[in-house]
Length: 590
Image 1 (cartoon, rainbow, N blue to C red):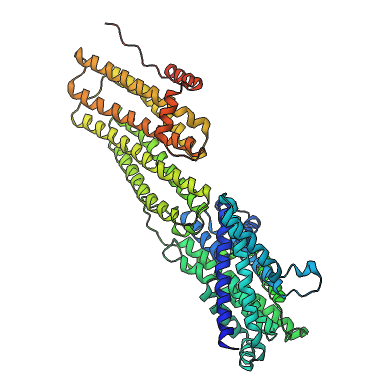
Image 2: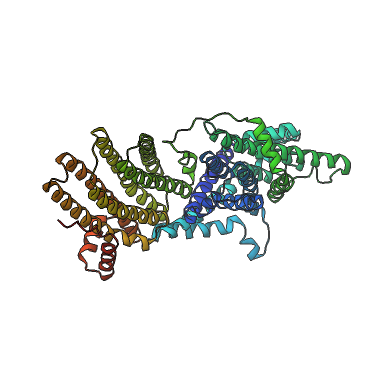
């Protein structure tokens, strides 16, 4: 085997790995994160977990990526350990599909249609279709399909290069002697583990094994332990990703390792034990790429069928290995925003969306607390409000950097739109929380100066409280569901709130002029009105962003100006409805 054969071998490996990466990335973008998002919504049904784990891995073409993602889910609290274990089992099955694709390299026939199934025949066609879609299509989705086609063609081309380069190995006695060593089960497993650990991909290491089979020197006795070792070696990625995670995330990664080690041990006992009794006729026969695909699938499917009923016991084993310890929790840095989820943008965006919604929910909770302390000061409620505000500030800081890192990845058009939505809204949610704390400052000032608002002033504020509560609820609902029915109600209510604030201010000035309220109270009251009005402005910004998202635009100011000046009848009807719903109490007659 010459220098140029080795050069082609490693060049083929480079094409293979890059093709797999391009194809997996295209498939992930084409799915828009929908498949991976399903994993975060799993039930406790282990059969569904196995099925979804297999499907997602088959789509993104990497069991390591699926397992790392699952570790991130467990670390962020989205998924329970038992769910994770069943999905990991399914991931081992899903990764075998690559070996079946690669097994087509060995197809030999004079029949035209069967010949077209050979990678050397269909890969150029797929590559041409892919490059045409990438170069000439304006649709993002079609470009993603082009990436999938081109990645698959590169993968197959890399496999062909490796297979052609490996053919001269048949004439190398040194290589034959090396393979005899791998017939030793322990050495064979060690070789498979090292190969997969270095490449960080069991699909790639199995592909290399399939390419080497072209030499005709790889026997079943050598292939079986190498395949078993490859399945153990693929656990390295998940184990590394679990460093610095919660105990349950570490357990999920360890569960992957235990599953493959126990499975390899059982399969080894069965294979070599039966050979001692039956003496397999094929034991020292050469394997083909097709045979490797069969062995790879047989191992993973058999292990899953055998160990799936013992998921609870596997869970106990990993819990025994990593015992419970008290973990420190930092509420301002939510585990939901786990960096391991960045490899699957759809899931990461869903996590960021949940954290952003939590910011709004905390602001809504603070609004109720603020009015309670305005009516009757309570230091415990004050402390809770400050705690909520600190959490919101922490969420905003973490979300900002998380979304920037996420936006640097290759994203689908839908993912880009969702990130834009979040970047536009997190500041508004944070400012809403800030304004509730400003209300707390006003309540604290009243308490320290031992003064309080008059009864008519509090009645006016209670009307405003009801209106602000409704606009916040509408905003949270439209953000959570992107429901336009809620979003279009926000702006007319915001204008009504502005009108109420002006009327309440005028009524308070009138009370001050009549000596019913002091100037000192008047300044505090004005601060309260200003903060309530600003909260409704931020709600308006969020709702306008949701509406504009449907039109692929984020010029909220332009949209709001057009809406106010359009004279839309339904808009006017909503304004009329809210004016009736939030009437200020009649002033007492003098």
